Length: 287
Image (cartoon, rainbow, N blue to C red; front, side, top):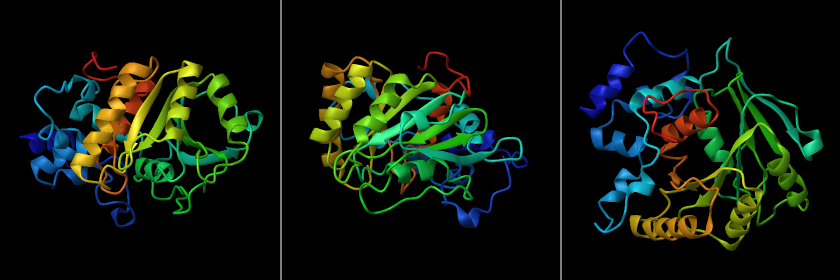
C-alpha cells in the first residue's frame, strides 16, 4: 500500500525532467525508490522508523517524528532539486569573508559541521538529481576552506561552510560567526553531527555558538549507516538529551541521514523546501 501511494504521485508521463540515470545515484529520485520493498522505502523516507523497534516502550517517540511530511510533500520538494532551463541549479561563488559574500535575496540555508562529518557528501547527495553540478568531496578532513554558495533557481541558496575541528581554516571563527550573526536571508542553519561517534567537544562548542546567536538551527545526524543500531541509538539519545536540556533555538527533532544509502535525503530536501517557503506542506501542523 505504501509503495502504491508513492507510485500514484509519480505516474508515467510526469517525469520531472530528463536525467541520465547512469550518472546519478540509483536512489536519487523517489521514482526509483518505488521499485524497492515497502519496508525499505519506509526506512529510506523516514529513517527513524528503522530504529523504533529497538527502543524501549517507555521512550517518547514524539520528538523524533515532529516533521513527518506526506509523500506528496516530498514529491513537491524533489522537483526543486531538478535543474531546468527555467530553474537553474549551479555553483555560484565562494567567499573567505562575510564582506566577500554575494548579495543574494533568496532564502538561504547553511551547513556547518566538524571536519570529515560528511558535509560535502551530504550536499552532493541533495543535488544528485543535477549530476552536472560539481560538488567537490574529499576524504581529507578540512577540504572546504571557503563558504561555497549553490543557487537553486530563485527558490533558495545552499551554503557549504568550512569544517571546524581537525585541519579547520585558522580563520574559521572570523569567517563563520559574522555570517551566522548578520546574514539577513539565512533562514536555517544545519549543524551536522557524526552519528557513528556522537557529539564531540568541538560539536558542543558549535552548538553553543548557535545558541548564542539565537537563530533557528537543526541537528543533522550523518553516517547513520557506519555503525550498529545500538551505537547509533545510544548516540542519538545522548544528543536528544542535550537538545532537550541545553538548547532553546534548536529544532527538537534531529534529522537522520546517510549520503551513501540515501536514507533521509528525501526528508531533508523536504525540510529545506519547507523552511525556505518553497513549498507549502499539505499538513499545516508540521513546523
